[in-house]
Amino acid sequence: MAKIIECVPNISEGRRPEITEKCLDVVRNTPGVVLLDSSSDYSHNRSVITFLGSPEGVEEAAVALAKEAAALIDLTKHHGEHPRMGAIDVIPFIPIKEVEMAECVALSKHVAKRIAEESKIPVYLYEESASTPQRVNLAAIRKGQFEGMSEKVKLPEWEPDFGGRTVHPTAGVVAIGARMPLIAFNINLSTSDVEIANRIAKIIRRSSGGFDAVKAIGIMLEDRNIAQVSINMTNFNVTPLYRVLELIKAEAARWGIHVVGTEIVGLTPMRALIDSAEYYMQLENFDANKQVLENHIL
Amino acid sequence: MAKIIECVPNISEGRRPEITEKCLDVVRNTPGVVLLDSSSDYSHNRSVITFLGSPEGVEEAAVALAKEAAALIDLTKHHGEHPRMGAIDVIPFIPIKEVEMAECVALSKHVAKRIAEESKIPVYLYEESASTPQRVNLAAIRKGQFEGMSEKVKLPEWEPDFGGRTVHPTAGVVAIGARMPLIAFNINLSTSDVEIANRIAKIIRRSSGGFDAVKAIGIMLEDRNIAQVSINMTNFNVTPLYRVLELIKAEAARWGIHVVGTEIVGLTPMRALIDSAEYYMQLENFDANKQVLENHIL
Image (cartoon, rainbow over all chains, first blue to last red; front, side):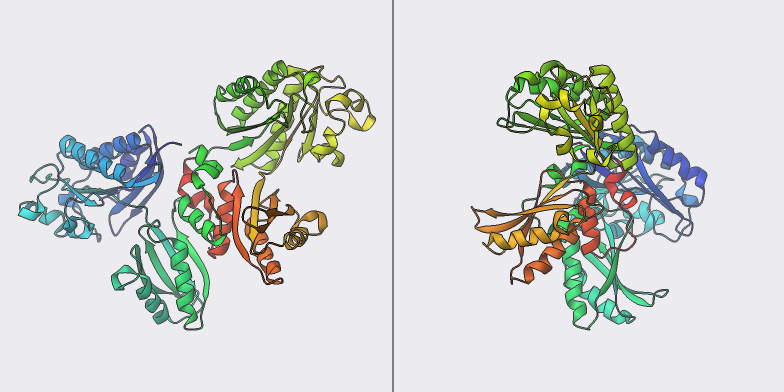
């Protein structure tokens, strides 16, 4: 019954595999951590690295990765379509098992302090770790990008949380924080009318009055000629997958259509699926921590 | 992505905790193995021990536990309500992760050979490991119990699979084999008429024409005044939980009643619940081995 935290840092390098590999080696060589995935995008010139492990392991891996990225990546020479402000651009910590969000927040602040001290990179805390409401959203912090950071850090409301007002000359600044796991959950409808998917997306997403932890848009799957509600579940504890699915079924019925299938893109915590199994199977008094066999060896 | 096998040996001691603890210590002290549970029944005078781990780990733990049980438990002095034929009575091996049934069968035969040689206990292979159809069912092997084994092993059709025809004087014989995980899955109905639960149980269980991997009876939950279909799922790959639940809903509707809740008693493999989540959520192309985060660290 070990504690497990996930970490999904983004580094500003997606074109030179030899650089990315050196960064991945830092993670691979850190005890207590497992590298799950790395995904590089050429046009973004950015790589998303996913690893998980013990709190101690992910701390060491994150601190070491920041150091390596700062040594290898020079933002004064970086071009890419994705906005960025640092060699290591963002470091989110995600509670997976036997860990409360508060512990991830504390870990993120501890890592932020170490990276500011050991790599001389100023740090903004974001999401659950944010020190002000204006810093919750990563996009607000990153606005101005690397090129604008030297001026931005001087603004009274944008003093970094750690590391002072001197931007690292080549590695910029970094956002560090704790957040829930994201689940990419898409729902396919028995219609080729994308407008219906758009209207349903609007119903379920927070930004237009829907569920608190849901982002959604309607898109067209051209190859299958069906419309899809493409969803980002930002906190499956607050808004569970089955609740979104059932509401979409109910709303779709209003147009005489139904759900033909769903998909989860990429990784999901076991718990998000087991919560849905419990709901649909009407399970009473089920304790996944105790009753799911695999939880005893994680 | 390690291989994981579960082992659920039963020992013929449920009254003297000091003896059971010595047996548990053998498991606890075996590298690569985690002791999950131990449950002793006084009237049965029997304990069920649950552990899991690597193939090598469970092999060593099973062999060592057989040796310890044979040293500590004397069946010539054993009395209890539960039928038994050995100090260690039965040793099932159960594939949990990254392991095929064939590998568990091979492991069970290897362990059988070692226990016969190292502890001088004759072994019958049972369930998936059985050498004849008559030996699939544990009850058939155990018939005659410890007291009758010296005669039984002499019968042409009951020569043990390993260890010859000399029953261990105090430790008797043991059944060893591979089987799927059992899931105790109960379904509560909106009726106090146990006869309906009995009729539904008869519909779903194999012994009266129902699902291949289902055993079921109707029982009355006196404290809640409702009837329950009490089910033993013997292979959730062959007969998944959701299929049984959906058929019961359909059959219950014939009497105008419905399912008010379900329960899983004890442990379940993650996969049995994720299969149900996939079904109810209409998930397309979901690969739990790759997409469930926790599977990468098991």
